[in-house]
Length: 444
Image (cartoon, rainbow, N blue to C red; front, side, top):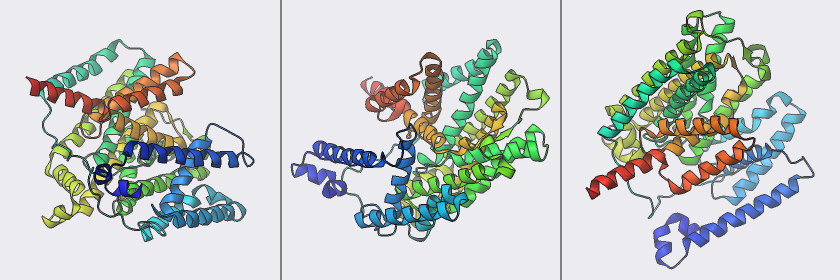
C-alpha cells in the first residue's frame, strides 16, 4: 500500500492490482469506522449530524498527529481528548473552538504535525500537466452572451420567488468563482472558504445595525472585513501545502464561527442579526436582483481578467513548480497570499449581498456545510476551466432548489445525482464539455 502511494506506475508494473488494493484499503477503513461508530453508541444517540462532527474531529486528529504516523494519530487523539475534557470542566466557553485552536497552533509551529514528516516527491501517476487556459472558444462566448441576455430579460416577467432564487444563483456564482481562484490557478484547497462569505455578511450586517449605515456602505464593509481576515489567515495558510493547508483554513473558519456563535453581545449568537434590509431604492425584488447581478457579474469578470493577467500566470507558475517560479524571480509566497486575500474579498462581496437578500445573518453562514457547498460547486463544474465554477454553482444551486420543492428526500436524490455526475464526468461538467469540444474539432 505504501509503495503504491509512492509510485503507482512501478507497483502496477510489478503485477499489483491497484484497484483491488485500494478497494481493500477503503473497505478496511470503513470496517474500522463502523466499529468506532458502534462503540460510540453508549455515549450518544444516533443522529443525522454525528457524521459531520466526527469526520471533522478525525481529520483534526490525523493532521495534528501527522499524515502517515500511527503513533502521531494516537498522541493527537489523547491530547485533543484531554483538552476537550479540560475545556468542558474549566473553560466551557472555548470548548467549541479549543480543538481548532490547538490544530492551528500545531500546524503553524510544526507544519507536518507532531510526529509527521515532510512528504517525499511523488513518482509516476502524477497526471498530465494542466493545459494553459486560453481564450474562450466562439461557441462558448455566444452561449455566455445568451445566458447573460436571459439573466437580464427573463426576470422582468418573473415573480418574487423566482427573483429570490435568481438572486441567490448570482451570489453563489461569485462565491464559487472566488474559491476557484485559489483552487484552480492557485492549487490551494480550502475547507473553510465560508469564513470569508460569513465575515462579509457580518461586516455588512453590523454596519447596518450598529452604525445605521446605508446599504452601499454596508456592502463596502463586507469585502473590507473579509479581505482583512483573508490577509491575516492567509499569511499562515499559504505557507503550508496539501491537506495541511486545507485543514488550517478549516481551523480558522471554525474559530471565526465560534466567535460569531458565542459573542452574543455583538453578533447576537445563534439568534443572529435581524432586520438587514436594502435601502428603499433597492427594496423591490427586481431592483435588488439587478444590483446583485451587476456586482456579481463585474466581480466574476474581474477574477477572469486576473487569471489571464501576468499575476494569474505567476499564480499558475508557483502552483506547477514553486522552485522554478522562485528561480525566475516570482515571489511564490506573496503571490499565493495576495490570491488568497483577493478570493476572500470576492467571497465577502457575495456574503454582503446574501445578507441583504435574506434580511438577516446567522453563524451558519460561516459553518462547514457552507464551505462544503462551495467545494461541491467548484468540483461539480470543473477545476481546470474558468466556466467550471459558474456552471457548477448554477447546477448545484438549481438542482437543490428544485428538489426541495419536489420531494422530502431531496438530500438523497441530490447526493445520488452528484455521485453519478462525478463518476461519469470526473473532470466536471465544464471539463467534460471542453474535452468533447476538443475531440470534435480533432475529428473534423
